[in-house]
Image 1 (tube, rainbow, N blue to C red):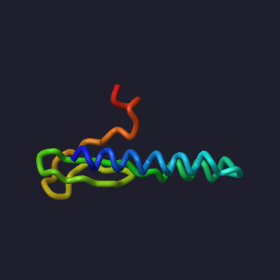
Image 2: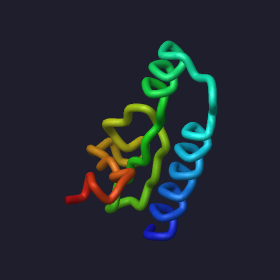
Image 3: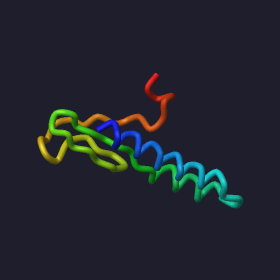
Length: 76
């Protein structure tokens, strides 16, 4: 599970770095990109992992999923 979390964070960092390097992005494009970002969700009991923009319940066991923080600042 930790491997998946680390992998997802590294992919997220790469996408954020690529966005920072773009020279000409207008406000409309930036707002659209922010609204469509996906997050990582997991259900520890059944070991299910989801990547989605919004996920509330596990498709396997129909219980609440937990959002995995995308940055260390969110864990503090």
